[in-house]
Image (cartoon, rainbow, N blue to C red; front, side, top):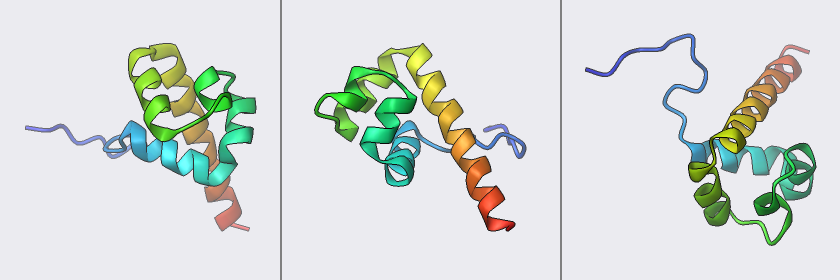
Length: 80
């Protein structure tokens, strides 16, 4: 049975969805500035970034952190 995690904003969100939303929100150049990894700065693509992020826990943690930051920013903007 799958555990419910109602207070975890990352629950049920795939890395691909996170990355697509981050690219749509920030764009590749800004994403590469905020998280300094080659797959965001040198010929970036979703596929190559996913391959790298799935193998690199520290980079995935940075992406998850930036995703949570983006969600907070969107929530603040919605309440203005």
